[in-house]
Image (tube, rainbow, N blue to C red; front, side, top):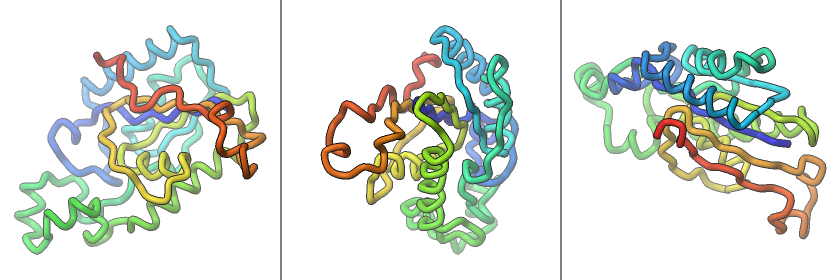
Length: 213
C-alpha cells in the first residue's frame, strides 16, 4: 500500500499566531496557493489515489478539496482532526496570558497544552494516532494508494504509531508537507525477520515541502 499523509495548508490563524485545536479556521490566501502548488506537484508525479481521507475541520477539508479535484470523493474521518487545546483555542499567547494568567506557559508548552482546561490528554492523542494507523491498515489492500490530510499536532502521534515507536517524537511540520510510505500490508503483522528487513516497508519522503521552495 502506498500511504501519504499531508498537513493542511496555512490558515488565517497560522498567519496570526493563534492556537487552533478544534477552532475551525479557513485557509488564508497563501494557504490556498500552497495547496494549489501541492496539487500541481501531485499531478506532475501522476499520483492516482484510490482513497482520500481528511479531518473534517475546515483547514483540512479545504486543502483536500483543492488537491483532490481529479481524485476520489473525500471521506471525512474525525480521528484525523487536531487535538483539542481547550480554552486556548483561537487565542494568541498574549491573549491567553491576559485571560488565563494562572497558566504556566513553560510547563504547558513542554506537554503540548495537555494540562489546559478542556484539552485532549497526551495519552488519548497517542491512542487516537494508533487508531488511525490500525484503521488504515485494516481497511486497505496491497494495491491501494491512500492520501490522508491531517494536522501538525496529531500527525506526530500518527507517525509514531506507524513507525512503532514507544514514544512520540517532536517534529516541526510545514504546511502541506508530505509523508509517504510504501507498506507491505500482507506482512505487516508478521514477527521475526519480517520486521527487520528494509525491503518491505519503506519511507519514501518525510516532511517534504519542496513544492513550496
